[in-house]
Figure (cartoon, rainbow, N blue to C red):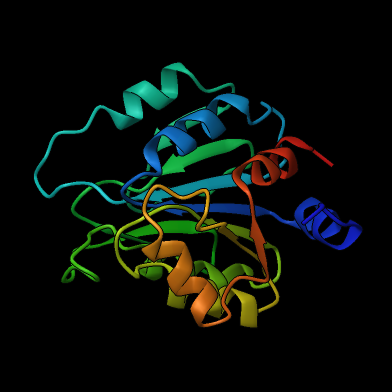
Length: 197
């Protein structure tokens, strides 16, 4: 579908950009980090599944290629504009009402910690309609329920078109429960997020 005025307006009014993905999404998220403008005027939160107790170079690699300030999330860290935050391994990332992050050590959700659902649902409670959330490729259903909660709060919710996804289950699960207001091709997602309206 072509990007319409409604989707562009919702994107422009968002304070938070949520990006969730698992298997098959790393390259897309890496490309996005490289193109997002330095003065985006939003906070970006990335939740990507990673192996338990596996040291990751994601933060270093993303940071070296980002135009925006990029950091791994720390407990009680304030959420700032024009910053990309990456959910750390072995914790669930939540958002508190005062605009701070909170890290949680409870059990994995969908075998994952961080869980996309946990973060998406937490952000929905605090930021409601002031969010744009995108769910990319992945091999399980994590993120679908969180995306649905965001949609019910009035957020702009997008699923990657399964035809474009390396692993279809994650975006398809969101589509199946009507959590995604829009199903966009990868090129359309990039076009929207590059437009710093």
